[in-house]
Image (cartoon, rainbow, N blue to C red; front, side, top):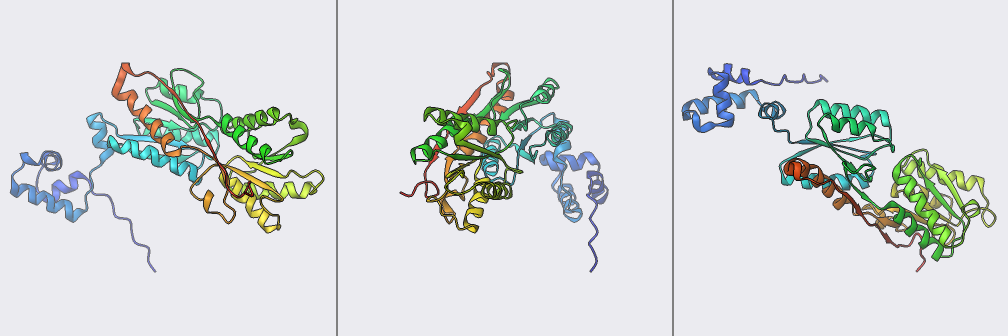
Length: 347
């Protein structure tokens, strides 16, 4: 079996030669067809078809001084939460005929920096960034070089960078309050690194719930840092918890997970070990992604307004350009909602 050879992309000069006209005539056919006679236009269009010519939109935008591409960096495109956020971004950008370049940082500041550099080199209109750490100095430097920046799923620590986020402290508190109300006094929290803002805030909210219930975290909270914020990380964390604790002695009776993918891995381990949910172990996730209610044991989760989050962040970015000096930076914060299902409540 032979591998097909990639076809070289035809240029506007190739089209001009094939049609026997000037490059300027081809440009007029593409952009101002009324200036070209029907006969010449038909000849150029035939050459375009034969050569499979596709205009270079980036070059045209640069010549015109109008860039219609926006870059966005999220922690993990594979997480359905960020997929849904990206849809909100796309829907807002589409209203103004902008397109989206999307990348994952994988919670790696170096990877994030490489994508920021790539986006800047491509001359994007602006960037939406879920910061991988609480250090936004690279974003401030990017903005100083003329690239508009909006923080996504994070609250800006400075007043002159806009942001759109969800109150994750409240979200963590909602999860903790629910588990305490269900009678749990020893809770495990499968979390990520506290340097990730969402992880730190959800932990802070959980501590508030325990404090309000008079439960000392030193004895009533077991925190486990997952190796990755996905199902495999959740599964490994749960196996570690089961291997190092004893039911009825020192094992927590409930697990709060930093996101729904982690909760999926936790549930997978509990099912494999024959541990009943919620009778022996209650589970609460975070994000309420589209599969949460469809699991074998439907997952209680803290719902975030994902589409609104992405849409509003994109709107803030585009407004900086359209409003110019009239634009006033905003720190938009949405409120989460607890969705109770069978994984934590027997009903």
